[in-house]
Image (cartoon, rainbow, N blue to C red; front, side, top):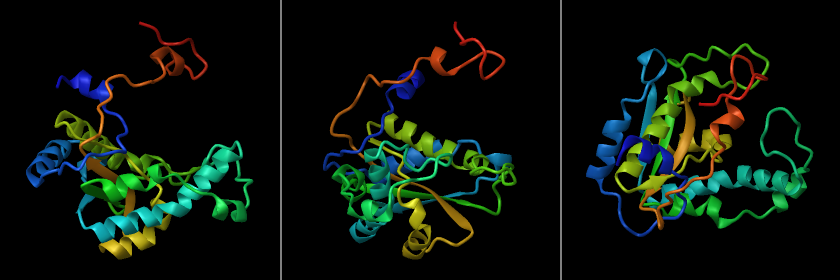
Length: 221
């Protein structure tokens, strides 16, 4: 596929056929994705290829509490898991909230799940002293995650970046033998999508790109 076609059609795939994702194809995906940039080119990311059914079931289970909070907040008209407005939904409501299978099925049904972590000893978290949630360290791992999805799309496969398991990081570390110095960045199910989207809905450039200032004029061609 042409680069721009890949970029414009790589979607969040959550439903997969029963087709396998062979090791040689997965290796080719990872072999190309590894050229993604990282801070200082330290390449602190680690990828665990999880095919074991029991482990995938546990990963899906770990994501349930965060998903329940997500949908409880959504039902209450809140922006789930945002760091600006404190949550108003009670824990009792969260615990009683049912989550759709779409939040667990991708991990249990995909032929392979990638658990991607990053070594906190090598990432440059230059925003660690700001009074907000840290973001900068993600620059050393998320380009790799996205490159994996682009490469998968080029091979006719797909997946999605899931983060609902991250609040249960200690359990993930124990399950997969991840050292405490590594932060879990993403859990990515990969497989052959049941359908391939060719048109994605995204905001036009003029709606989120401005000239010179945040409140500047829209950037137009």
